[in-house]
Length: 187
Image (cartoon, rainbow, N blue to C red; front, side):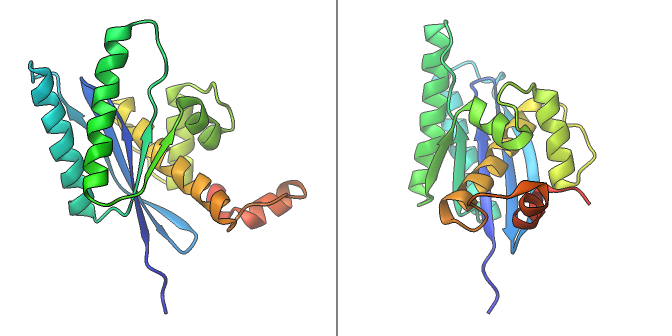
C-alpha cells in the first residue's frame, strides 16, 4: 500500500505582501508545487486586507489539498504598530488553517534560516539559493516573500521528520548524515 503524500503550506505573513509556498512530500522526495505572493497594497482598509488573507489561505488549502500548515512567527521589532498589524495577519492566516482542520506549526525566522542553510543569520538570497538546490528549481521569484514562505514549508518538513524520528538521531560524520537525509543533498 502506497503511503499518502504530505502537502505542506508555508506562509510568510505580511500586510503588504504575504508569501506562500507549497511542497509535496512523497516517500523521501520533496517536490515544489507552487510559490507566490498575495499583494495587499491595493487594499486601503486594514480589515479588508485581513479578510483577503483569510480567504486566500483557505483557497490555497482547499485547492492544493494541503494537510499541514506552517507559518513564520513575527520577529520582535521596535515599531509596535507594525508588530500589531503583522500579528493580526498571522492570526487570520492561522485561523483559516484551523478552520480547515490543519495542524499548525510556527517557526521563528532564525529557525527557518538555520534549517535551510545551516546559518540562522543567512540573508534572503542565501535561503533562496539553497531552496533552488533542495527543490531543483531555477527561476528567481520577483519577491523574496515567496521563497521565505517556501523555506517555512521545507523547515516544517525537516522539523516534522525529526519529531517523528524518521531521519533523526545522532549521525557519525557526513556519510551517515547523507544516508539518513537523502532529500537534503544535491545529486
